[in-house]
Length: 253
Image (cartoon, rainbow, N blue to C red; front, side):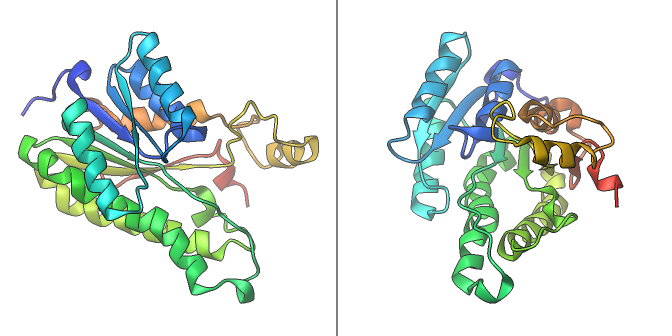
């Protein structure tokens, strides 16, 4: 089945009211997709982003939901389908707090909190959008994971464990869904400050740049471009892949 025109495609970006998710949502809107902006209830930035996209000629709407809650996810996808149409592109971006702690201080509850965002949420969202994707023989699922799976930081064991599981989820879903015209891929950002690098000290910036062959800081736009590719028609023969956007940092020992 031919892919629908860009203007008729619908993208749901979880956790897109701010940060990296916001930039991804804007990028997809610029590509001509109708964008479902997601955040928690009473999130004014979610409403502001949807309004901004609409003012500049795009199509968007805001949908409040906790994407780790099964009932709210079902209601979210139903509301998006009613307002914008069936979800063609799902970008799993939502995240929560990522506290640092020594291993002896990390409880199972700490692990479970990370798994909720990086395993439970993708499963709930994916299962909710799959029936229509399968029926239409077309779909794109893009997971946002992290470089930490290769460059493991100290004190982040729960986060690294959940992100590792997310990669397994991506690959197993890609294997099973390829026959239905649905691709499942992941984008793994390196260290990417969101607000024009204002939150990065000169010391951190210098240390980071010395480890990046590209010689510059990464930007949210770098990540959004990668997501845009995986969401496109041109990526229809690419599935089960993981694109690390780190300026070559992973090449440095």
